[in-house]
Image (cartoon, rainbow, N blue to C red):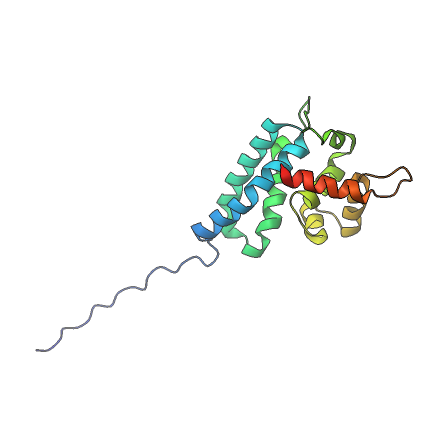
Length: 169
């Protein structure tokens, strides 16, 4: 018996090296979704605006995750969230969460800087990159947002209490 000539098969299509696996994308989104919701609601001062911002962000992030290196996903997610239309224009009647009413007394930029630290847990360099500012500018925004004691110094206990309250939401 003489074997016939082998038919050459075309090689299988190459997998897109940048395409995230469904498991990796789902795990990332599962890990960031709750913090994203808390962040958006506190930044906007509205559950509705925060919910809409998160939905907008999740949809766009999932669509473009394959074009972003995995290590850049956190910065890209938070950048997209900040770009959400409902976070770019504050609601006319913000209703802050109990205990977070003071957020309405600070500007949008310092509030975002503070929430990127307290809720998102981003390092200074990543938070500055998300905001599109230099690290000294980020530090200044964060300093403006921090609670201060009667002498004008940063109130460390109040800062820690804010962090615990934000994480408990």
